[in-house]
Image (cartoon, rainbow, N blue to C red; front, top):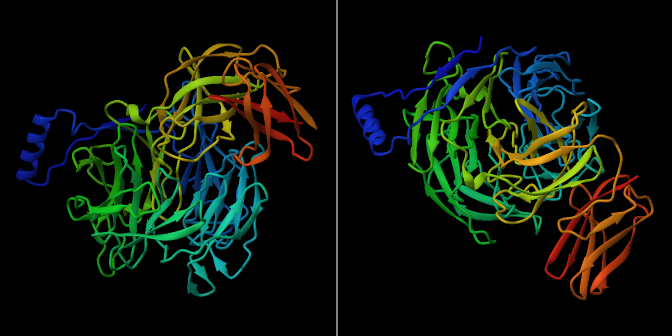
Length: 593
């Protein structure tokens, strides 16, 4: 039986109760609450940290089993049921990692694989590895160019070119300013730009201009990584302290729907940051104090599809006791600049868990709900937000391009959403700012496997986005509805036809009149398109990491144009061919065999 808990406001004084009632009278939806639902089955093994959404809609969660120590190298997987329900999802085990890890870097790569590195505890402190969900295998990454470096619980972020910027906590026995760049294509690390301050325990946040922002530990200074110049630059000073003075911990950070950033501190302080959108510093302002003497010392949070943030919070650290019990849950609404308490994910209407908030874990699911797990416990819960998804975060689909009956390309906008999704701080990264493809008919739901999306950027507005996707095995032929989902926010459905045979055809691009053949190709391919006027044409071939691997410029004539593309030396795989002719842009997928 599925058990549900309706969350309620827990007033701690008559004054707060009257204020809450007054606010409800003014705005009946401002303090509406979501619903906790217990997953039908507990996991095979207890939760031990990171929860990651794979690009086929399944979820993997780190466990403490395996590896010969208490930190573990095992993972469990959640497979949603035939109706797309994670509450009724099925559990299984995946292949274990080589190393044991607890509190480590984690990213989902552009090709759908998973990158992990470091570990504050365990054997993988200065090593990374990559998981391939298709083969269910882990493979070592690296090594680091300096084996005296320790990643530990260092932060990481994926850049727009698909590489991972990886923080290093220690160089030898000294606190580090070092970073590495991990290239998933070559499987190698190279030295990255050093930070200005110390980024240990910090939360890195991706901004709409693709720069990365964080607040230096032991200070109120902030800095940004600028991808175009490959360096960190000083930004503005935060007006309040986010780190607590005992454990020097802090909490998660989020981009808000209004274009501002929001940081939660272990100190009980919060702060807003307004990006400049340029190389100039942004503007910091103090946010509201977290209520009830609570803070976010290493605590999970998640941006929900309704624009509110679900937060796990604990009492503010004090001398000798940084990670204090219990764990409370609040929703933060940027529109009212306020926190509202909700009940904890337990049966019986309790207002808290007898755990510290650092044990919390959250993940944005493709169905718009939030998955919650607690370290050391095998029972997971789902939080369903109230209200409706934000229109500002809703992807749109422009077209579906067929490569063959197995593989397609979706084009549109906002495929990566307006936020990175859930956040913990420094100890693992649980972002979901990449497209998920959901295919449904009647009451059945399937997920394609996405790969090769053109960007990791957020809040891209009207800029074109693309993703390749393959169909799940055993999908019956027929007509379906297809949606692209970003951080749980789904696009409007479009009709989608599943082929009756497996084969490859010529591919149409964004507009009528562009063809690439043969497809698949080997040494060369031909691009044919119709132009309404003569002029200059640029043709680019990009790999799944959006890197340009071929580029040529031609003169087009009015009418039919035919150009050859030299593919010699390119590895097997899926590529995007982009052609610009006047005010028309064509994009098609090309398979090289």
